[in-house]
Image (cartoon, rainbow, N blue to C red; front, side, top):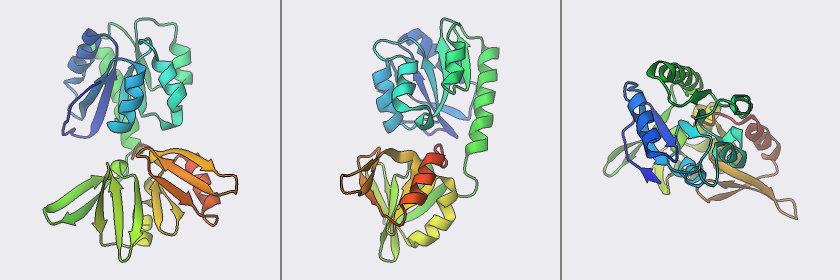
Length: 249
């Protein structure tokens, strides 16, 4: 998997195609759209599954036929609910109905013209704008080295820490001088749910929810963190998870 660090103006793109020329073609077509930046490239479905967790793209241009796992295989393993927006790329047009059954935003047949590509990007842009959190798209925390801006979509979970809240993101934690109750009121509508009295979880970071033999329920996050779900919060948390919250926020 080839990836790059980029200060994306708004949204992050993952390009998945086993042909280098096809990946270059998408980059060239995307170049005129300043709101998007390429976060990484993948050559097969296995790389895509890893990149979805590490790069957290907002949209993926996904080839249907790739070595090993193809585009449909990726969605089947990940599930449509946990995918970013998907634009399929293919050299064939017979998969269109299946693509839209998989909840793809668009279906592009190679070679793709700039006009057709631009129409797909406009559709993606409308969807991303309609799903984006408004005022609370990020949190700002103070550190000894200065302020750190944390986009909500990069937060795994938040735990209570005395008079502070500890924000866990990308393997690091930051302290914010706010109570968990205050944060829940601020960002709860943007895809966060209380797992127990001292834990607020971003629903989009949930990998699986398990129940032990003795009835204890645990949520496992993409980061590997495991958080218990209290009996009191179980029903509400389950409803929030089924609803999906703001998975792309």
